[in-house]
Length: 248
Image (tube, rainbow, N blue to C red; front, side, top):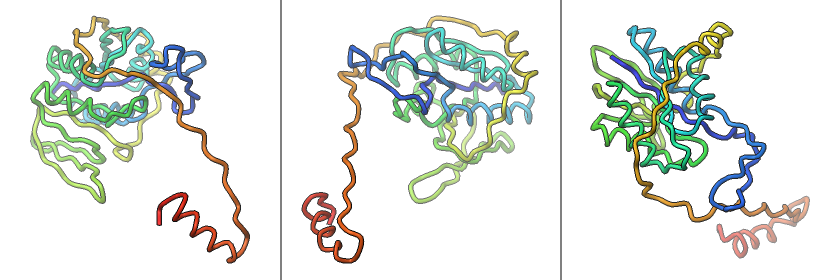
């Protein structure tokens, strides 16, 4: 068994995002980038599987040179090697999935972990698209995972509950918070990561199927109103909920 873990380089969720002058991209000035938080659960589960089955784990990322920082984080946690599929141009979910699928096939990986979504565009479809392109089975939003006798048993979150899914390799698993507790990179791991190989290759060409026409900031929140401090305010509150908010 050979494992791939797909990681993306995204703006820190604590960073204040500004729209760039072209109104189609964000202004990179002052933006701190990190490994996608959901991908950290994917890396941890890949490493736990590696420790159980003594197999190789490869971190794959699509992006520019800056994505090496995220790959290094995965290497410091314990991943064996990294692959950067280089493309300085923006890619939509399908184009990212196309590049990942091509490299996963090239590496011969039959088990793939990735976060359920990236926190930049939140499309939540790269895992499913990659699985479809490879003809792999796919289980999404996984909060429990194990392999027993070549059979994958995964617990997946659904609206209002959870479901248990059984499938077989090759498979793509998209990970959700609650699956595990990602480990911290040790000093030894950080030093070792500096010596590990990050292979660079051009991402397979693919045309974007979607186009960003314009980005804009959400409208500012309206200030709150105090209608009163006792029960006398209830009629006015009901009136506003019915006529202004239109939720009654």
